[in-house]
Structures are given as structure tokens and as C-alpha cells.
Image (tube, rainbow, N blue to C red; front, side):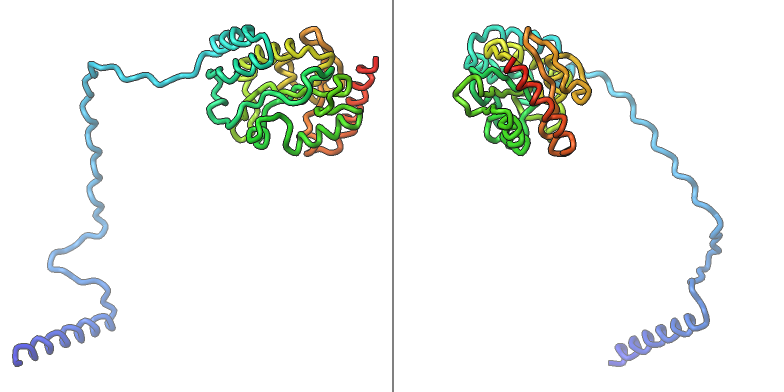
Length: 269
């Protein structure tokens, strides 16, 4: 008991001495060796660079690269030209693996409507709803498109070629995040588009948006081109603003109505 009592007394005494020094303003413990607080430490020298590695006898595997644009376009032309029917063209597109968009899409979006229609509508690319259903223009923009053409007596569901619509897109697969197709992607799909139009053989083509304008007329600026008739593949072509644009800019519907009346007059003439 005597030893334990002495230890306890020493501990309390040390604590009391420390508290007394804190009250006196002591903030640092002074050691026996002088300390120069203004003396900076020696800078750390960087480690020397590792010695150069000897070249390996085995060359690394090259990164996979996409097909060159010219080679992909040539392959697309061969595949498209071999198709003798719409079903054959669909099969050719389904087997075409050089377009990266195919890897991220759920479905091939080929066409909708009456293949005997006088009017062929060429859109840009599938969106989310189109990718899910495998049909073009079925989302909000597609519903507006149906109402627009119904106003001049045309419908994708009409069995009569005189009042029917046939609808397809330049891109049969949905681009990620609905981004615009690149010029290389458009050029790659152009042979399929041209073959599709040749097989359907419509009287009039309506291009809706910049992508089909670039694919058929090789130009940009749909808002400048809209309403002005042009020619492609021996067919009259009417550029129009895409319905998705009209949903964002309702004030542009007046110009779209003028374009629809121009189409109606062309069909009657």
C-alpha cells in the first residue's frame, strides 16, 4: 500500500505542477538542447529517374480501331446495292457491323407506313421511344408529325397510296444521348438511304432536319433551306424543320404550315 500511495501522490504532484506552469503562461516545453525555430529543414531531393527499360522482344498488341471511313462507305455501298427488296435491305442493315451506333442501340429502326405511298418522309435518327419500339417517329415529335400531315390529308396508316406516308430515317440506330450523327456516320449510311428510296420509288421526298438534308442534298442549314424545293435521286425534295424543333419553337409552326401547303400543291399538280 505504501508504494501505491507514493505513486498516486507523485502523479497528483506532477499534475499540479503542470497546471501551475500553464497558469504562468508556459506553452512549450523547454528541452536541454537549444532549438532554432527559424532553421528551415533541408529540401528533399527528388528521387533519380528509374533507368530506361530495355525494349521488350514482344511488341504490344495494337488498340482496336474503327473501320476507315472510305472502307466503311465502300462496304455499305456493296451491301446496299446487293439488296433487291426492302426486306433484303433491312437484312443488309441488320448484318452491317461497321457503324458503332449499332452496338449501343436496342433495335434497328427501319421504316413505318405504306411502302406504296407517294410521299416518303426522311428523318434524322431514332430517339428513345423509337429505339424501344423499332419504329420511326413514335415519340412526341412523331405524334406532332402525324397531326401535321393529317392536316393536309396524309397518314402513315392510310392504305391508299395517294393519301399515305412512308417514313424512314437516315440513321437506323439511335445515337447515344440523342446526339447529332457525325458526318462520317451520315456518309456511311447514305448508300442504304439512297437504295431505300430507289426501292420504294416515291413521287416526293420530304427531308426533316439537318441530317437528311446533308445526306441527300449534301448541304447544311435546314432553317435556310426549308420551303425551297430541290432535286435528289431524280425526285423533288422538300426540306422541312424537324417536328422536335417545332416543339421547342412553336412560333415556327406557321412556316411549317406553309411548307405543308406547298407539298399539297405539288401533289395536286
